[in-house]
Length: 208
Image (cartoon, helix red, strand yellow):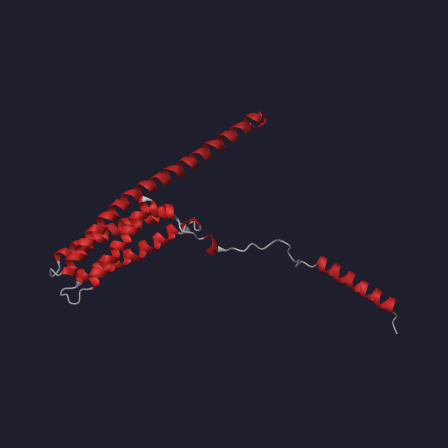
């Protein structure tokens, strides 16, 4: 039989062997803390954006587009129906896209996706909505049956066209201002790099 001392010695050797094999193993346990990304916890409503002119315009656009869509949906009979269907598609699409952008800007979700040029995205949406709302309202005004729902839809269509047009003008200004700041930053970085390179050349004249 093995004595107690022999058993303890065997256990010690086994422990040392496991430690050595663990140290030589390429798969080592990491001690770096795992950062939990609580995305939903960082989402907050930006009341300053809602109080700004861009936020107010977006909210008005969503409301007017929804009212126009409801008005056109109350029409039960139409012949021809091309103008009705066109206005229905434009109002529904503008309501959904503008509503999504409003949520993105209000909840500061655009900060989490900096790869997307959100100013340009907003500009494209407002410009396209202005054009298609004007076109669909004009078509519906020319082809209608003088019903109350059609007249209301045309009225709200031209109203939301004006709001989208104003938003497009402001979006163009913001987009140009953003491009100007970006270009100035790139120019400043280029001048700083040239200055640093020139300083190194002066410090080491033997390289010239």
